[in-house]
Image (cartoon, rainbow, N blue to C red):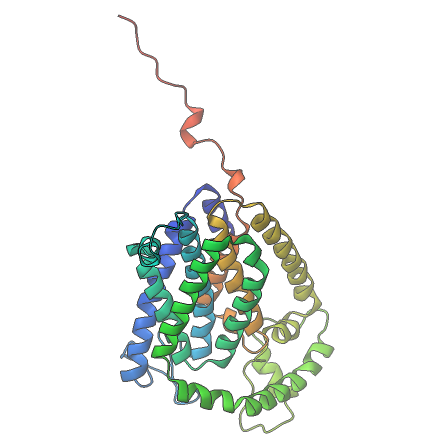
Length: 339
């Protein structure tokens, strides 16, 4: 998916794909909010889930996996909004502020703002601590790193839209429930530390090849030392789980690929002088949020999240200068007889 999307984006289609993803995020978020309020443990009001763990959220059995998807889609949508705001350069002093705001927020920008707000509200209503914290940290880091690319009017417009989206999203959120979730963070950290500690012997014993893809739960049947009435089925840290299942044989190529991706991403963002750079930055922000969340979760093991991450990586790294001649350019021009 990464290579196919990257080749396609080199020829065009980034904006169209971003609009499609934003529209999908809007629909899925509304569905998730309605389902959480009325469906109990049934996905789409039809498919029942296990009676253990948190309630499903939208099409995801685990709310943290929904959060992984949302924290990729939301920054991408906001990046497209920033690109559209950057196109409005009419900041004449005689134009009233209300008129400038109306010009800046056209119908397409309005529904992008609505999609962003609904995505944020769904993320907060999912009560995923890891998703909310990772997104906030990634947005803060991205804002600091890219603020120099914004001129005065563009900076004010982007900050106004970002503030408006945040306020709209928080208005929908269940703040008391979210506060209670964060109040239990200490217990969650203690549980994670136990899991990580009991996973490290697996990493040590299988440091070359790992225990094998998908064997984490089976390995912990042997290595788990704490209460064995419930066995750990995942490490709740993607980096530790990759080391346990893949060993050096997997972690070394992944580290090399990660360094290569960061290098290419920085180069593409630095060289891009078009409005597409903000979509690239939004995609990079989403991938950064996932990288932070995966200190706590393993959401990329789901195919839907892996595919979305591949699309975002393609948006960041595609080279628009790779566009070749048109497929029809190899055919000779038609000739007509003279009369």
